[in-house]
Length: 470
Image (cartoon, rainbow, N blue to C red; front, side, top):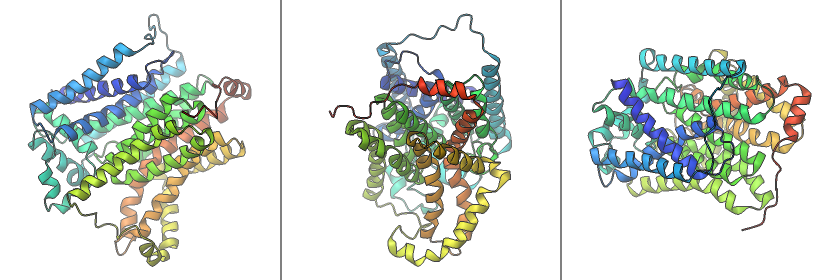
C-alpha cells in the first residue's frame, strides 16, 4: 500500500509537469511523447516543491496538500483544453525490434534501480542529514518548512541547502501519513525514468536510423555511478536528481541550437530554473548553460528568447540567496569564500587537483568508459567544424568538467584532499547524464551509414538566425 500511495504522489507531480509542458508548447503537430513525458517528470517535481514552499507559509497539512494537488490537476486540465494537436493513433501499433529492445532495456534498468533503492542501498550520511531531515521537519509542520527552521542554530543540517527534493519527499510523506525512508527513495527511479525518456527523445530527433535509440542509451545505462553508490539514483542523495534536471535543460539547449524555437527556449529556461533550487552546486551548470546559449542569442539578436532561456534560472537563484540573507542564514563552512585573495592563497593546489581529477575521470569502476568517450566525441564533433554541433556540448559537458575541480581552490578544508575525494565524484555525477547523452549521440552518428546521416541533416528544420527584433 505504501508503494501505491507513493506512486500516486509522484503521478500527481507528473500530471502537473505535463500541464506545464502543454502550456508551453500547445501547438505541436507531431508531439514527441518521450520528450514531453521526460520533461514533465522534471517540471512536475519542481512545481510540487515550489508550490509547497510558497503556499506553506500560508497553509499547512491537508489544505496545503489539496491546494498543491489542485494546482497540478488544474494546470493539466487547462492545458489539455488548450492543446491543438491530436493524440497519436495507437490502434494496431506494432513496435519494430529496435524500439522494443529500447523499451525493454529502459524497463529492466528502471526496475533494477528501483530494487536497489528499496532493498539494497541506504540513505547514508547526506541522504539522512542534509535532505531527509528537512523532509521530516516539513512533514511534522504539515508539509512546509517553517521559518523557525531557517532562523534556528541547526547548522549541522545545512539550512541554506535548497529544498526541492526534501519538499518532494515531504509530499510523499503526506500521502503516506507517516515517515518512511524506503518509500521516498522511489524519487531516484522517478528521475531515472525521466532521464531515459529524454535520451530516447533525442534519439528520435536524430532521424538517422532505427537502431540509434539503443546507441544513444547505452552510455547512460552502463555508467555504474548513475545507478549505485553515493550520489546515484539509488542513494537518496540530490546529486542524481540535479544531474537529470541538468540533462533536461541540455536537451532543450541543444534543441534550441537546432531549431531556435520559442518552445525550446522556454523549456530550457524552466528546466534551468530548477538547478539552483535543487542544490547550491546547481549554479555551476546554470552558468554553463548560459555560456552555451549566449552566442546564439547574440547572433540572432532575439533578446526575448534569451530572457526566456536565462532569466528564470538566475532569478530563482537570486531569490533563494536573498531569502537566505534576509533570514541571516550563514554560508556553509566548507568554503572560505569565493574571492581572488582566497584563490591566490591556494593556487599551489593546482598540481594535486589536476592529479586527483585525472584519477577520478579514469576510475573505470565508477564511470566505465564514459569520460574517454566524451573526449573522443568532442574531438569528432570539433573536426566537423560546425559550431552549432560541437559548441553546445563543449559548453554544457566539458566546461563544468573544468570548473568543478576549480571550486576546491576555495575549500576551507585542511588538508583539502579529503574534501576532494569526498565531493568530486558526486560533483561529476551532476554532468554525467549530459556527458552520457553526448557520447551516445556521437556514437549513434558514427554508427550511422553516411547516406542516412546526410539525408538526416538535410531534413533538419531551417534556421532563422536573424529574426525580427521585438
